[in-house]
Length: 128
Image 1: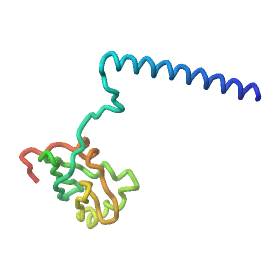
Image 2 (image 1 turned 120 degrees about the vertical axis):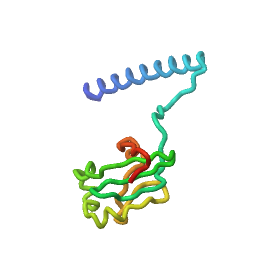
Image 3 (image 1 turned 135 degrees about the vertical axis):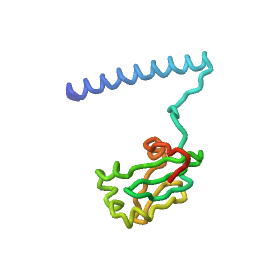
Image 4 (image 1 turned 180 degrees about the horizontal axis):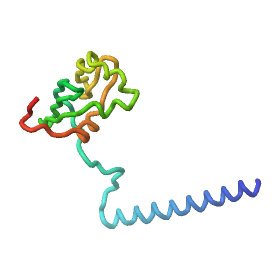
C-alpha cells in the first residue's frame, strides 16, 4: 500500500469512528428524551390544483385544493428552455390538469403545484 492509500485509509477510519460516536450519542439522547428521529422537516403541505384557466398576457388563474385562488405570471418561466413551447399563445391556452394535480400542456410541459403555490399571489375575491 502506498503512503497516500494508507493516509486515506486512516482518514476514513477516523471519520467512521467519529460518525459512530455521534450516532451513539444521538441514539442515547433520543432514548432518554423519547424524541423520535425525524428524517426531514415538512415545511408546508403539497397542494393540488383543482382548476386552472389561462388569462391574457401569459397569466394562469389557479384554484388550489384549499380553495385559495392565485395568479401565476408564466413570464417567470420563459428564461428556461423547457418552457419554450408555451410561449406560443395557442399552446399556452391549452393548459389543463393531469391526474396528479399538475398543471400541464399537451406537449408534456408541466409545473409542480408546490412551486406554483409558493410562487403565486393570492387573487382577491376569486376574480378573473
